[in-house]
Picture 1 (cartoon, rainbow, N blue to C red):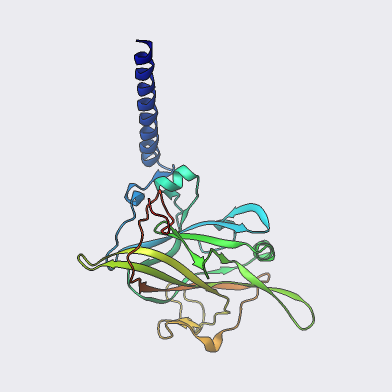
Picture 2 (cartoon, rainbow, N blue to C red):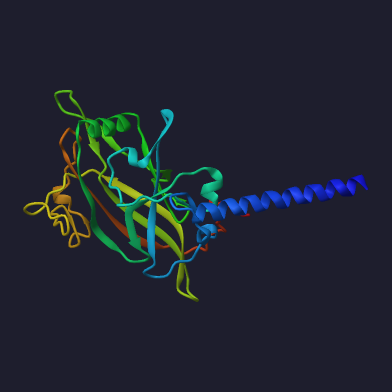
Length: 273
C-alpha cells in the first residue's frame, strides 16, 4: 500500500514538473520582451524555393581564452530590432542566438549585397584589434547548423599583417561568401539544409559618388561581378575613423547523398538516433 502511494506521488510530481515546463514555455512565448521558443524549429524542417532564411548570430569565441562575447559587442551590422527567439534545443542548452542582417531566399543565388556601412571610432577599432589579436572566431547558425570555414566552426574576425617597417597592422573580414548545401526531395521539390559554410574576405570597398544609403553602388562588389571584383581586392585595414562597408553573397549547392537524421536533439548529422 505504501509502495502504491509512493508511485502515485512520483507520478503527480512528474506531471507537475511537466506542467510547469509547458507553462514556462507558453509564458516565455507570450510575454512581450521575453525569450520565445520556436516550435516550428523543433524538427529539421523542409524549405521550398523562395522561403526566407535567417542567419542567426551567436557569439565570439577563441581557443586562447575561455571568455566569450556577444556578437554585437563588436560594431557589426545590427538589425533595427534584435530578437532572442530560441528553439527548444537552444533554450535547454543555454545557447544565445540573435537575428542578424544576413538574410536570403532558399535556393536563390544572391550576388553581392550591402549589409551596412559603419565608421569605427577609437573604441570600436580597439575592440576589433583585440579580438583579432586573440584569434576570436564569429559563430553563426542557419537551420540549426553552425557555419564553418574549412570544416572548423565559425570564421575569424580578421587577421594581422606587418609592413616592411615592422609595423603590426590589423585587417577585418568585412565580406562573407556563404554556401548553403541542401538535400532535395524530388517528390515535393522541398529541400533540407545539410551544410552551411563561409569564406570571409577583407576588402577595401569603393563606390560611385557620395554614399547612397538606400541604393549604394559598389565598384568592388555588385550584381554584375557576382561576388567580389578581384581587380579591387585590397584588404581593409582597421584604424580609428576608418569606414567599413559590410557585404555578403550566397550560393546554393545540391547534396546528392541522402542526409542522416538530424533534429534539435541530435544536431550532428553524423550521429543517428
